[in-house]
View 1 (cartoon, rainbow, N blue to C red):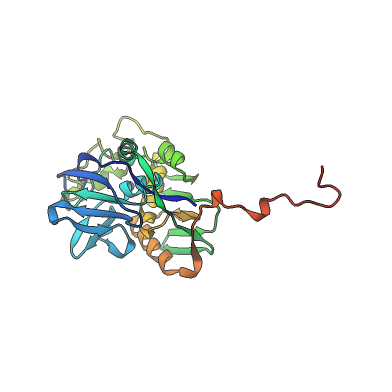
View 2 (cartoon, rainbow, N blue to C red):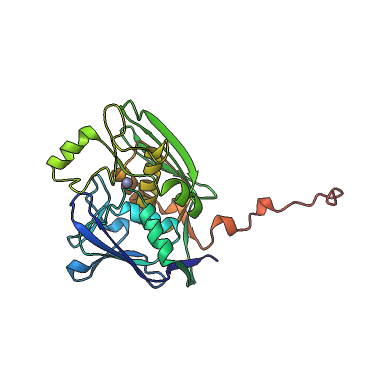
Length: 303
Ligand SMILES: [Zn+2]
C-alpha cells in the first residue's frame, strides 16, 4: 500500500501576485492524513478553502477557488508541484488572495517542497483509476481521459502565431519527469494581449521575470528553457487543474487547445462520471498484473 504524504516541516516564501501585483507571503505546512490540500487566508481569519472542484470560481486566465466569497487565485502551478511531488496533505497559507507567480513556472514550488522534505504518513493513499473513457469538447478545444496503467498526459497546442503554430508532447508524469521536464516551463502570453490585460486591471505583476512574452517576430525574453516550453507549460497547467479531483489519477489525459476553463470543467465532469473510474488503494506500478505472470506451458516450462 502506498502511504499518504505530507511535508516534514513548514516552509515559507515571498512573491508577488501576477494579476494584483501585490506582495504575498506563502507558507506550506504539514497536515494530518485525509486533510487534503487546503488554502488558508491568514488575512481573513484563517478561513479555509479546500482545493476541490466544489470550490471552483473565476476561471479566466488562471484557476481560482472560492468558498463563501473568500477567494484564492492562480492555484494551478502550486497544485501541480504538490501533487507531482506526492504531497497529499498540506495547509497552504496566504496573506492575500493570490498565490505568488514566482518565475511563472512550478520550479520554485518544487524547490520549496524539496527543502521542506516529504514524509510518509500512517494511512493508505487512494488513487482514482480511470476504467472507461470520458471526453469533453467546446468548439475546437478538446479534452479526454482514457484507461492506462500510469498517469500520462498528451497535450497539443496550435496558435495563429509564426513562432507557435503547433506543439505536441506526451509524457508519463512521475515525480522525476515532472521535476525535470515540466516544472521549469513558464507561463506565456502574447505581446498583443498584454495591453488588453493591463487595461482590465490584470497582469499588473506580470513582467519578463515571470512570463514568456511572444512578440511579432520573437520571444522578448532572452531565451526559452525548452524549445517546446509552451506545450510543456500547458501540461503543467493541466496537471495542476486535474489535482482538483482530489485523488492522484491513473489514466491518460489527452488535451488539444484546452485551457483552465476546459481543464476544470473536465475535472468536475470526471467526478460526476462515477461509472468511469474506481478508487483503488495501490498504484498500478505496485499492483501484480496477472497477465504478466509467466504461464507454465506443459512440456516447455523448463525452457
Ligand atoms: Zn500556467
